[in-house]
Image 1 (cartoon, helix red, strand yellow):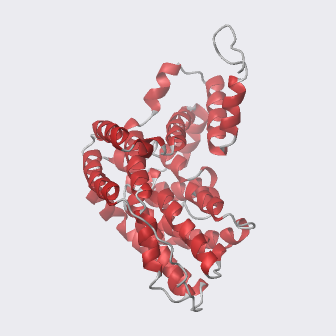
Image 2: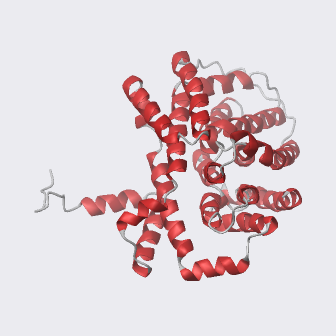
Image 3: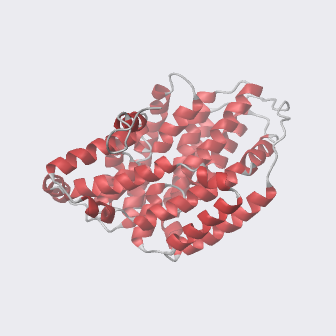
Length: 378
């Protein structure tokens, strides 16, 4: 064992922390940015928690617990494998996976949808040769397009929903036109990209067990939690949820993505601190994003440089038009891969080499067309 110093801390502890941080580029960038901001414009450490929208973070934590419970129940993989048995062609499979990914992303977030659908595509690829790179690309586009529909679909929607004060139903109704238009565009693209080549997936005889009790309770709890979050009671709802699962199935709570929660907290602190810097504040103020069209364009373009979640947090400081911002950062999830963290996750899950070029050949033109559609609707 390593010896402790006079303060009871291992000498290599800071190095071990940095090693952990450096493995996650987004986290490393946020930590470095926070250090730079503290040098340029020092703030008391006690003031930093006040920059965090805790209602959003608590809601995200609850959703992570519930989606992890549904994932661990085995229901998603069971349902997915049952569905593909009715598909007999490459194009039909691609359209089904796009619909499945988009549908799951509306309630289980775009990241969870990817963790369910991309492994499914990879497992099917072992049974019958598939154009796996093209499948992963359209699946990534699908979770970005489908997740537009609800506040639960992605972190930026969750943030804008919580800060807007509108009800769940109003949010869905307002963003429905954009989601429908982009899904129609994606289905047309998928139909054109894939051929009606016959497939034989009859060898998929693997048994997928479902923990019905865990699945059923999680689905009921999901509805209750969303209702409480809609009523701005995410804190008590999360506490009850966490205690309940810790006493019953503690692996559900222990296996959630805590790193995502930490990144989200740091995003609020760093981006709101940066937006308050006189130079940055004046630069964004000079652009002027008070009109819906300008707020939309700012969200769609800024997302290409810093991703759509940070873009939503930054621009919300300068515009209260949540619908225009939601349209902008949703469209911003397409284009370059960094536009949405879901894109990076999809490529990483695929395990395929040489994914970046074909991804951008499809995603950048899709972003351009999506920009025009969003502009017409906003």
